[in-house]
View 1: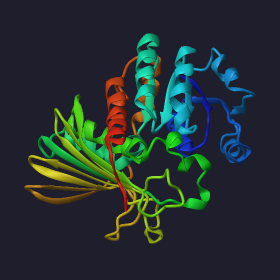
View 2: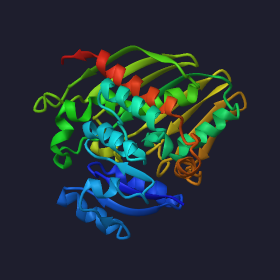
View 3: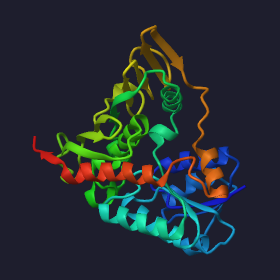
View 4: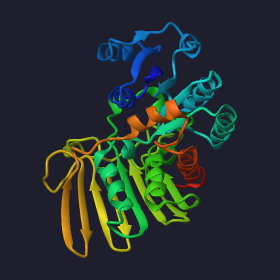
Length: 334
């Protein structure tokens, strides 16, 4: 079994990342972070992991197989490069990169070292309804996939946000950040291995006090397996009850699937809702008992040097599509 450590815990997604590997039987050994307000609750949640004195203590430990991070987005790719150059595999929260230059350097180092650089696109990999949709699509339930429509609304929770949340150079922009989820799902469900950005736009409609912040963005992609549209924003109303009404619609030649991932405004409690519509009718599937295979597959890949959880070609192309959408985006001025 593998042993892993954590360096950088600036986003709460790190808890899901850690739990993903713990659920697969991996051993959590140590962590390093510098922010006391983040360290205290993290250490309380995972008392089995010792607090390292430095990043180097983890990187130079030959018994550690993998390093996880949710550090400030701009710092993730440089950290991943150091991890790979120390002979370890790497799993990062999304976005895994904030610039195309970072992506190019990671691609080079990953090819040189042969180590794993995995971006945890949690809206697919850690969502049971999306995993079930993948199983149905693979089984031919809706025929050949034509298009994905993904929406990723989020709640701002402004008082809880750290300084870097409002600095474009630190978080990469809204399409680089949130829409990397939708880029991943577009590629996965259409089976595209090549794709381009057709059009994209971003804007700051309601947060003038943070001029570098973007609260809206959308993008159209065209791939060799299908097409995709994504809309992401920071306008989830407080009345929803969860952080966002994330949805995905997968259109096929013989039907379509709609996912209501985190909430169902129609009234069903909880999340992980899947609706399948085909020539036979409408079927609702509760996906709360679906297994999440990403952690198990990633552990297998670390041990066997395979790419069953996610190929690097897919991982990097999804990030490239988000980065290109951000770079090419027309800025909307309210």
